[in-house]
Image (tube, helix red, strand yellow):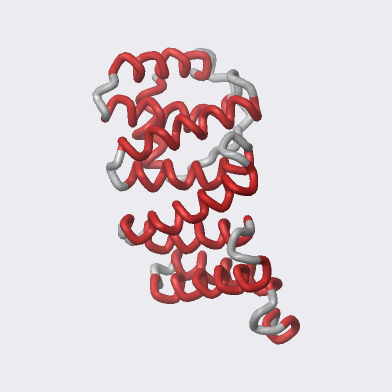
Length: 199
């Protein structure tokens, strides 16, 4: 319907294409997901130019199609290109870098590449601290990821420092209900594994 209204090369169709791609991933139809995401990226690139943030977002979606299949080597180049675009647009320490950095941290954590995950987690943590302040619970997931990668790299003293920073985020002993804070990662199993470094 959107394509009929706006045309096959209109940027108006990129959001529906990405939605179809996400639904295809949910159904584990990886071929269709890759096709939808690839088409959305091509439409955005033609409409906005190859260095536009909308292209970077499309690239992250495309990378996700490979990451879900654990084909991390194919996912990585799309992440790296998205990073280059956002650095050129926003600067390395801008909050505009947060989505792509969060995605890269998750990619390298799943890929068991702590040497690549750690600098991205460190960069993301600095950006989040700048945006939300050092005492915000928004930092919790990234702190946990940073502690985990440092531990895996054998940098135990640095990991211990990160753990000590996590202490103020622990739940109060009376289990009072707290407002749920936004998370930059969605995988509950991965979150549970990382959170051991914040207790």
